[in-house]
Image (cartoon, rainbow, N blue to C red):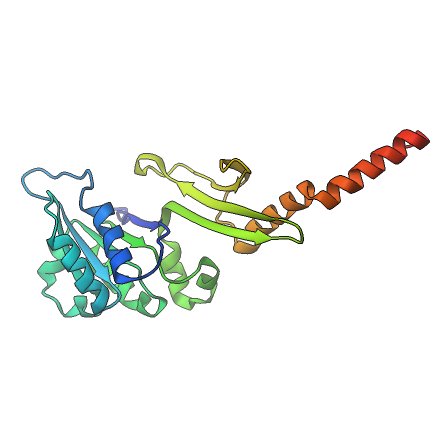
Amino acid sequence: MKKIKQPRLRVEIPVVDDSPASLSQLALQVFNEMPMRKKGSKIKILILWPNQRLTMAAIDAFDSHSSDIVVQNIDISSILDEDIRTLNSADVAVFMAPEASQLAVMKTVSDRFYPKPVVMFNPKWVFEDEVNFGEMSGFVGSFEVVYSFMGLEVRGILSKKKGVVFKCVKDGVLSGERWNVFVEEEEGELRVVSRFKSRPSITEVENVLYNLMAINSPVTKSAKFLKDLVSNVTGKK
């Protein structure tokens, strides 16, 4: 009999900072009013935080709001010492802002939580670091990115460009969505300039933006103008 695949999802939403207030408010906005229902009882979400300070901030934030969803906030370092019923009673487990040093615990929790879904939300490490995670690289790679929004800016000699790397899975159904690179136009609107099948590295995205800057730079435009002028005068292309 084929083993059921555990849903492992990854979400990356930018925040102003990594302060307890910002992260707890983000968690509250995302999970407190999620459109999830279950016959006969309330949905329970278990949020595992990387330290006690963030855990307490989240508890305070959720206690001040009512919801049809039960949310329990726990410090990830203590989850393995909790009663097994804490894990068994949850419908979804969320690793909120996890650190690379906690990957082993995350894997243990995920294995114990099988086959119910686990979510990795705003990991503290950068994507490029994951190749150095050794035996944990496979575990991290098993999480499918369903939403990611990452902004960046590159500066040239005479100009700068703001860009966004974006991926979104509609209705939670994975169907080969691509990673889109957007650039901010002068009017403030975003325009798609490139698409990738797999997640692009920061270097790849920067190259896209640098090339775009080079094409539109005053130096390039001046060079093209002079070339066209010479061509018109000499009759040579």
